[in-house]
Length: 287
Figure 1 (cartoon, helix red, strand yellow):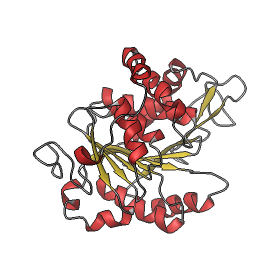
Figure 2 (cartoon, helix red, strand yellow):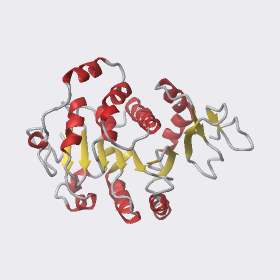
Figure 3 (cartoon, helix red, strand yellow):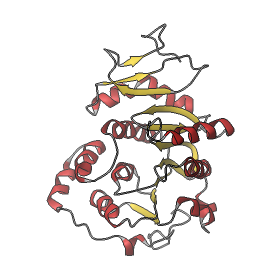
Figure 4 (cartoon, one colour):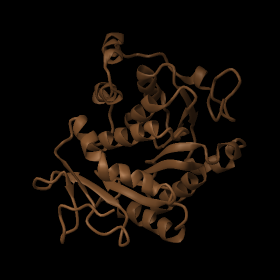
């Protein structure tokens, strides 16, 4: 039982989910088919087709690979979505939530449709809602009990540099040692302030996060002491795992030595490369 979870099993950060959650308005037959599928990503792909949102399929596949890696590595913790909209990306994280983990949704908007979508794929999931701006979470009486308890945090709230910086500080306090923070619209030409805020936070807090990976408008941060574990997975297994999900037309990049920059990249296919190394040694991925 998580510290902010009531003994009756209902979440109580802002709205009692047991009371707030609407009935599932979806066609139950469509979800009967989903229940028969064999993989989490197949379930997500089917359920997300009709959900409005901005989440590239390639990014979703990358998420699924990293969340599966957390599972195989026995990295536990709760999951947090800052900025939910209709729950398109939260669909995937809630599918990966284990029985003892909570999916926390932070958004001042009405989340009735998002909850309907999430309950459609995981009626048994423990979902908590904080229906206020993310900065208000710092002042919540249960906040201290949440520190270092999350393994997956997606920052997709307001896109000002100021708000992204606040959300990064929130993530810094909530992320556990083995977790990942995903920042939306990283390297998006239309939102340069998001990228600016990330690099500024990394520069001023070098012991907090390392930039592990970027691709398809997402930046992936982890703790500096954990980056080698994730980097080994990205270097040796990520492409084959993406291919197994139907995304073989991608290239994983490590275009310089790790002493120069430790970050990997994922792009659409570059020539014939599954993995592409530095310009001076393109077939070699630096360790």
